[in-house]
Each structure stands twice: as structure tokens, then as C-alpha cells.
Length: 277
Ligand SMILES: CC(C)(COP(=O)(O)OP(=O)(O)OC[C@H]1O[C@@H](n2cnc3c(N)ncnc32)[C@H](O)[C@@H]1OP(=O)(O)O)[C@@H](O)C(=O)NCCC(=O)NCCS
Figure 1 (cartoon, rainbow, N blue to C red):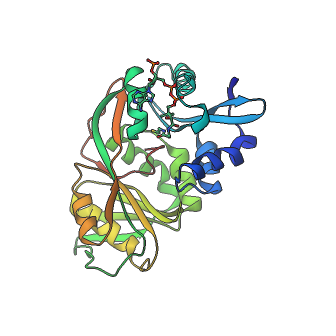
Figure 2: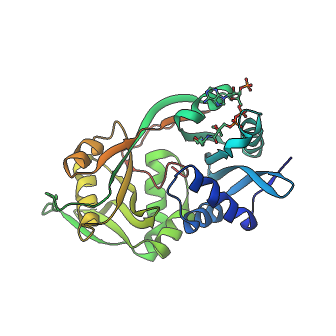
């Protein structure tokens, strides 16, 4: 069994691993995740037995899609994959979101739980009461020339500096909205195709009412569709999403190895994904 760098050739087998787990990732979601980051793979005689992906976002890095095929579990493979990724990421502060199954492994590797993320989804979004912008606010599409500014803005929320991700969303998202408050950029949110339907995230702005305005606009037109949002359990967004019929289905644990981040006047009300954070 070898631990090697993951590349495009592993994507089909990696997709099958998530299918077996009933995780929602499409082939395109895997491709995007690997294109924006790096991965290590456990391979035995050409067969993919495990994966770990990671993303270097400035001082911080996130890890995810940590999977070992069920027939190969309990033999130290998950630990080896994680140790290889952690060694690659020397010098970074590390963050991940752990499933119930992964938490024990990460604790053994020195990760500490700091909170949790809640996943809200609706299989068929129903029409509901949405929140319109205030007179002082304006919603508009993101512009290419401000992507750097948006990347700097979101890094104040969570410490992750990821201009490549913002540029990728600008190119591929269904809608990428900016919220202006009195003519100044106050936040943004993106809607993209993911998994069984659509995902909204990242959602980055100052406060909950701003997040509700951004999400309300992105939800309009999605009635009848599958929609998912991952948000910090403390953000307050989850309770509101429940009132819109987007129920909580999952609550992975946020874990850090290294320094945590204190938001600087801006917060992440929605994650890009549990893996990329
Ligand atoms: C989580 C997962 C990757 C672990 O892989 P694995 O190869 O079975 O784990 P390992 O055999 O390397 O275990 C390493 C250590 O973690 C411990 N560990 C693993 N799973 C654990 C669990 N659920 N609870 C407590 N400890 C656990 C093992 O006891 C072992 O400890 P040791 O080093 O002291 O012997 C695997 O169970 C999996 O793919 N689960 C489904 C997908 C998933 O939930 N992934 C996590 C995403 S965040």
C-alpha cells in the first residue's frame, strides 16, 4: 500500500468512495475541490483505498474529504493519510470539520473542538417569507475588478485567504451577489450547483440581517429545488433557515490544530463547503 499525491486519475474512484458513503459530491464537485487544493491517496495495487484533501489558504489550511474505504478501516490508513497531509502543511494553522466517525482520529492527531457547523437543507424549497434589502442597501452582481477586495473581506471573517476560490466562484457560480450598504461593499454570497442541487456559500457580511437579505435574494427562484447551506451553529442563520423549511440534517464539529481566528468585524454566515470551509 502506498500513500501518493492525488491527481485527476484518482477522481473517478474517489467519487465512488463518496457515493458508497452516500455523500452528495458530484464528479464536478470532486474536480473543483482537487483543482483548488491538493490531495494524498492511499493506493493498493492500483486500487484507491483512501483520500485526504487539503487547501492552503494563506496562513491557514483546511482539510477534508478524509475517507477510507470501509473494507480498509481500522488499520491505521486514515491516520497515515492525515499525518502525510499535516506534514505537508507544516507552518499552517489547521482547521477541519469532523464527522462523528472522524472526530476520534483528529483528536489523536492534536485537533481540538471549538464549536460546530450545522447543515440545513430543503429537498424541495417551498415559497416563504423573504427579507428585502433596506433603503440603505443595494444588491448587485459581483464585478471582476473587486474580487481581490472580496477575498480580503472574507479573510477578515475566518482568516482563510483564498483569492483562487473567489475567482473560481466568479467564473462558475450561478449567482455571485454583493451587498452594498450606503454605497460601500458590506458583504457577498454565492449560489452554485453542488451535490443534489444547489448550495449557498460562502456568505460573508457584518450581521445576521445582512446575511438574511443576501440569502433571501439567492433563494428567490429556487422554489422546488434542493438547496443546502452550511453555517456556524452560533451564527443564528440556522434558526431562520428552519422557519423557511430548510431543516438541520447534520452538525459536524469544527476543530483546529494551531491558532483559532477571531472575526474582525465581518463574519462567515455560510461556508463554501464543510471540507474547504
Ligand atoms: C474516519 C476514518 C477516515 C478513519 O479511518 P481509519 O483508517 O479507519 O482510521 P485509523 O485506523 O487510521 O485510526 C487511527 C486512530 O484513530 C482512532 N479512530 C479511528 N476512528 C475512530 C473513531 N470513530 N472513534 C475513536 N477513535 C477512532 C483509531 O482507534 C486509531 O487510534 P490509534 O492510532 O491509537 O490506534 C474512516 O472511519 C472513514 O472513512 N469514515 C467514513 C468517512 C468519514 O466520516 N470521514 C471523516 C470525515 S471528517
